[in-house]
Amino acid sequence: MEEAVIIKFLRGECSPSEEREMRQWLENPEAQAQLEKVIEKHWMNPTFPQTDTTDYDQLLRKIHGRMRKGSSKVQPSFQTVALKSLRIAASILLVVFAGYFLWLSWNTGNESPNSSSVAAVKKIERVTGIGEKLTLTLPDGTKIVVNAESMIQFDTNYGRDERLITLEGEAYFEVAPDSLRPFKVLTNGFTTEALGTAFNISTKKTGYRVALTEGKVKVGSGIKEIHLKPGQMAIWKTDQKDVGFRVARFSASEVISWKDGWLNVDRKPLGNVLKDLERWYGVDITIDPKLDLGQRISGTFENKNLKNILTGLSFSAAFTFELTGNQVTIKK
Image 1 (cartoon, rainbow, N blue to C red):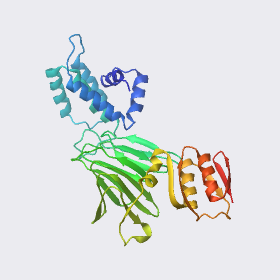
Image 2 (image 1 turned 45 degrees about the vertical axis):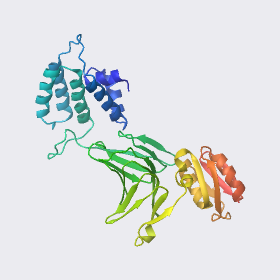
Image 3 (image 1 turned 135 degrees about the horizontal axis):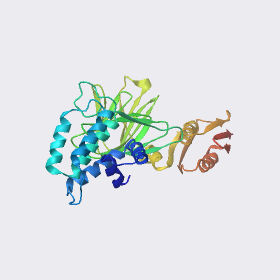
């Protein structure tokens, strides 16, 4: 979003169409980071132009009027402090700062009676369907690549007091360092905790896997926890609850190649490979019952083109296929 439009919005000068556009933009998780950059820029350079004739007292009253419409529980002390600051500084900085709290009040629901925060916390959820992948960059710089048929969830106050993510499915995390706020992922009753690191989490009905590519992570459930080193993967299987975690080495190219658009398999059953293709590409695969789905497949394929992958697999697994729309028919 253009900075000029953001400033206009915070000063209450947007047209109805610009305001609608801003409200839609603010639903984007990356919007808060840009908004904070604008605030920081004016904080560091609060020069007040001589030609600015804005009546800041009147402007602040308008802002508070709009805030009262959006949320009836904004603390009354904010108006007193902000008004005094405006009279002392007479700077656009404080208008932007006031507008920041206005933005928070517009993007949250009613505040709980015992809450001391300006605005209530709201959940942000992102879901991928069959054949979809999603890349997100959080306000702290952490990058998340979400695989197909997965869900991540985090609060609007992410990064202020803690960095907490809930995951269902599979995702790859490149965590921005922050020694004061460990990065935590909650899934299937387990917690994976890291400071600055990169790792992959895969959750399925059959179990749970955390593969560490760099840095350090701690994986735990209740009183049980283990620490991983790069190249190690924690494995927990649903049918072996009493066994606990098993730590094993893993091939990075096989475990995390999906995020870069590659399919890498090493002696994986054909049936499992075809199930992965169904999920990644959003297709329905009908398989000839005469085909041996237990035969082991090895190879590396650039998975941007399903037809090319099926062609490569057909040579090693001895099958033919027909691809029509999202329907695939495989015959021995």
